[in-house]
Image (cartoon, rainbow, N blue to C red):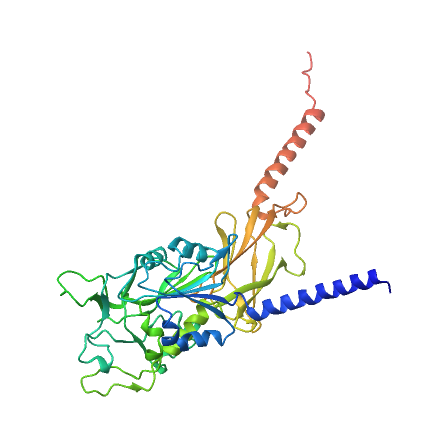
Length: 452
């Protein structure tokens, strides 16, 4: 073999190996990357919240730490962001290491993920970021207060150490990891209250207050209405953007700390017999929350979309009105390591032009393959198969396939239909009348009178 041939063979082998390694790396990493930027109020937070960061690093993430006072933090280059995830643990910082609120919003618009933690001391930058995510924090120096659901250690305090266990039932299994939240240790929370500014299908509270909870400053008596109260008081708010970006906004920075992770929990009761837990549920909750935000869980995708006439296996170039067709698609869920079948109810298929003409529920088997059989409407044009699934905690599925539907050809219409019998009878009667008239006209002679 010549040197030139050997060179090209080795080059081709290197390209093939590089491609295989890239594909394998992409499959291992899942839908999102592993680069994380953490902006901290003070670098001491790295040690006081070490367990939270270590749990993230143990899952293969590379965290770059910067203090909010740093001025030369590389965030993007040539219009591309250098990180996949952003952790903002700098609630009181006026300058987030040179990163402006608009940069954070652009980061989210690019499909990246953010964890933001607040406190009773909030800067305008953090408030603006939260406001753009449809979340409004309470005023400066305010706390979430509950004189009923507080930790026993805060009995003689201001009752700001809340024992929280009010999860959103629709999203608990996906984000928290179980439906049996009563078996989990409650979460310790001390921080500022949030209010979701307006109803939105993509913004909701995963952890909220009790009916006795309210948010107010400790320095002033309550003379007027409070900012937010009751179960509307959001402690941790989630945003799932339509571009698959995820944002978690927590009203407490302390809930991520080692101190709260290792603290025992016992809700105060008059008889001091409330159930006691040796450790709070903060570590489990925040770890599951980070997994969800970093798109390790709750990610869905649609594959193997097929549609064809009943009795056939391949899709035609054009459908005809009133045909019976079969639609099928496979839905898979990312479990953090690989794609597995996703089996659920309430997955719908719409066959629409401007408006849906057919809406039917898809039935799933154990392999996550959803199928439906239906008859096309008596309308022709360009139609759309639209698979729709919107469930809290999961990514939005809205897959579209367009197909043309034509009317019958001239030789496809039904002949001698019952509704046309009166017209057939009238035609035959006209022909019969014409025949009789012609016969009479041609063969009937007038008799002439005989002359006398």
